[in-house]
Image 1: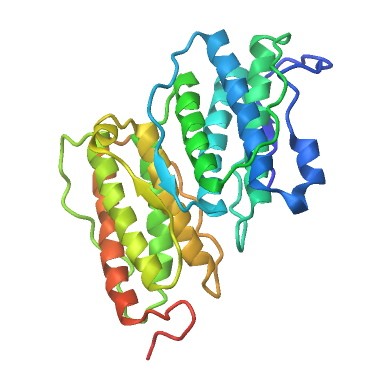
Image 2 (image 1 turned 45 degrees about the horizontal axis):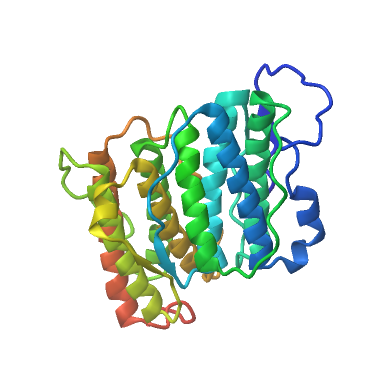
Length: 327
């Protein structure tokens, strides 16, 4: 799953000193990979946040001032997909500042563990460290934070905040194009789930295009989709997290925030999908081209139509993850 760097005409820097640009946790992570705990993840996220704050100061970029999302009942799968968003943003920052980027990370097959999450955070840290090295090779960080008790809800909130800060460091910030691509992945998962029901319509017509939509409109529609996924999951005997978002946060939503919420939806759909007998992830989505929030709003509307259909079928066949649905 480890993404290797692809380099584009980057000058060789020679030996690297033990500074903020090199002091990350990958080697230690490999030693504890079989016994990773939320406390391990908290240390890694704290180290990454310290690196981002130093990088923000060096780059003269603004501080993220958005309040934390209220997340409850998070599991490693949600944290993993949020961390993978962190990796993508860190990889884009690396491409912008060092002309290096890594291969996309593959979603682990089967149940996602804390060790999977830690590997993604480590990969994001490597890219942030590389940018720090390029901007200021002598930069140093404070000592690592001590290990403290942590849970997945707290980790989810901290990673969302890191995602927001990382987005402010980018020249090419996450846009509706990226959200459209993420939602399309969700649509692919939903189509796979619908295929479990003989006769179900997997490919649905998109809703009518509506112009003049803003990220807030997309965000609100994604929240509605998340509510449907919760109903589907609970009817199927699968626990999901709870997401509380106030109207002010929705109204202030940026495309990066919308992308983060879409990542949580994809995590829940991917978890349902992994429980199927043939649970190979869908193909990666190709770059969709330039999109406006209105295009994304329409795309989320298609996902919502799939979820409405899936909800009806699951209500009729609540044992669908365990039994043949042809009866």
